[in-house]
Image 1 (cartoon, rainbow, N blue to C red):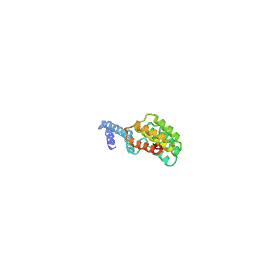
Image 2 (cartoon, one colour):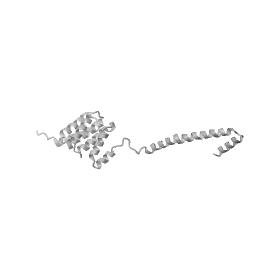
Image 3 (cartoon, helix red, strand yellow):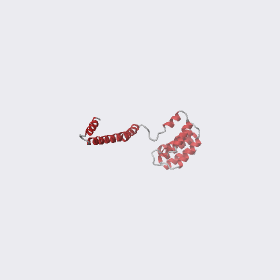
Image 4 (cartoon, helix red, strand yellow):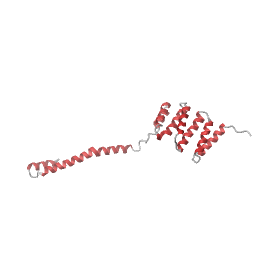
Length: 189
């Protein structure tokens, strides 16, 4: 500010008329820098700080904790509907449908609906891990909810035959043997 007053005094007295132009040029540069800083850089830095402050604190995809909280509170119908909506997203389709089937087959006592949904899911294109996940859910549904050990054994056999080299085949074979021991009478010779 003092430099501006001196430059104006010099320009008015006639001693140095170019001083006023120099001060005007400095004020223009100052205005440009202030405008750039407050209008562009400051909002960009604040936005970046906001993004970096939340980095790692929010879960990508949201998880299933909100739906699980509904289940814990006993609001099974709302939780099942939330899982149905979540299953519309391709990334969560298998997990959400299996969790919905567990609710339908369990507390909501709609095992037939769960069976239809899991079989429709199984009919689509699944990875090996997804096929095993859906198959095990079907086995549980057949055996525990529908009281149909024959279909449970057939599903276990399908999984074993379809994925013979998978690490979980040993457990599937053991489960199949246990089901046979429980439900198939020994042959009398």
